[in-house]
Length: 81
Image 1 (cartoon, rainbow, N blue to C red):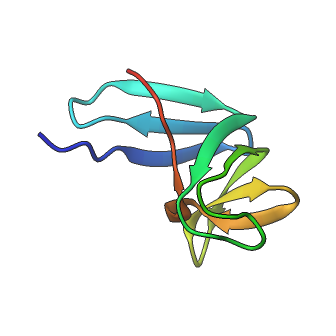
Image 2 (image 1 turned 120 degrees about the horizontal axis):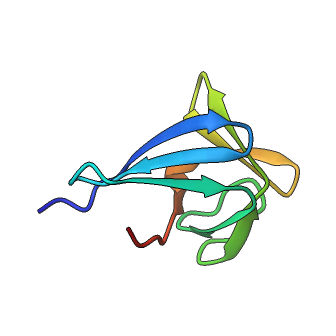
C-alpha cells in the first residue's frame, strides 16, 4: 500500500490532506513540518511552523515559513488519520 497523500490548499490557513484510502484531514495553520532539504535558510532536519499555504505557479503548493514561501515538496508532514 502506498503512503502517498494528496495535498490541496483550501485557503491561506487550511491544507486538505487525502490519504490513499480516501480519508480526509484538514490541517489549520500554524502546523508543523520537517524540512527534508535545506530551503531558503531553513536547515535540513529542522521542525518549523507553516504560517500560511498558497497555490504557487512554480511549486504547485507553497508554504509560508519565516516570512518566505517555500516549495511544499521540501517538507514532510507527520499526521495520523
